Length: 360
Ligand SMILES: *Cc1c(COP(=O)(O)O)cnc(C)c1O
Image (cartoon, rainbow, N blue to C red; front, side):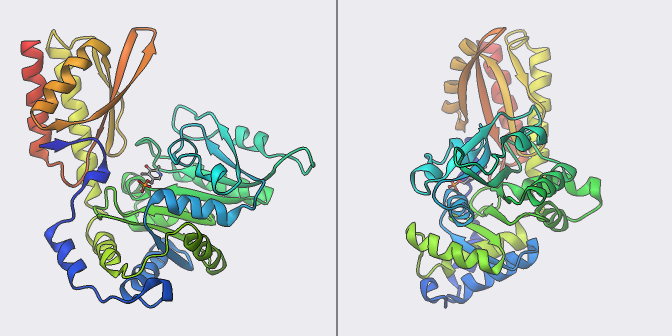
């Protein structure tokens, strides 16, 4: 069984469950759940913010952030493909009355600085008031470099805007960048956040928690965020059970993300080698470059429609979406590596693809 559909499918380990089981509990809406308070203060310190807030999901921490930065009728600059714009049910518009200003992504996953600057509206009653820039890192498995993150923060500062990082997978970006900056992953994460007004961080993806996301910011921002969380129904009670998992994850599951990146790279290299060797795959399967834990492969549509059920029968699950290219109809398959995918799973998956190609 190898479930590549998402890093959200991770199961809490026994050690994580033991930490949850023995957590000291209170009522977090009364602000007296000791384990949640501890998680929030540990996370804030780790990432260099004054305060943090625990919430049920990354969708909610992003929405809380956008609603805490923006008033009704304000505008947030986002990426066309970003989670905050495309994958959150339009929450910022529906629930926040915030106008999204989506921009096309560059090939590296960034928003061009010139596009951001051009999208900032002048102070004129015709326009929504531009208030916020949202940046996603990592984005579709791609890492935005530190210099770019700094440039966006500087642009926001120069133009009087707030800036938020959708850092659902920020730790994957930090792990990928740390070595080249000679920093630890946590130091790197802190550097990536510097100059930003807020960051959301998912605990329930590669970090391996069953539930939860953190929002980080200044004391004043988190005080506003707390009211918005309550309004959205995200105020929970004995959250120490969940926060304990978060504490365990911050202590044990960050540096190990490098294993997921290694597995993902080996999967990409293995599939590339198979596509070169096996006639059934030649010219029909292309692995895109891997930077973190997410691999995309473009597979000729008819072949993909045989491959997916073949793999599913062998317990190998993944997702894909169709598109048309100059070469014809393609299914882009998404393979997400995480702490419940082992190097043996990678070997087994490559073996299954080999067997598929031999019989197709
Ligand atoms: C997963 C994800 C989120 C939050 O998702 P939830 O499932 O609501 O926790 C936010 N942003 C990005 C980029 C994500 O990948």
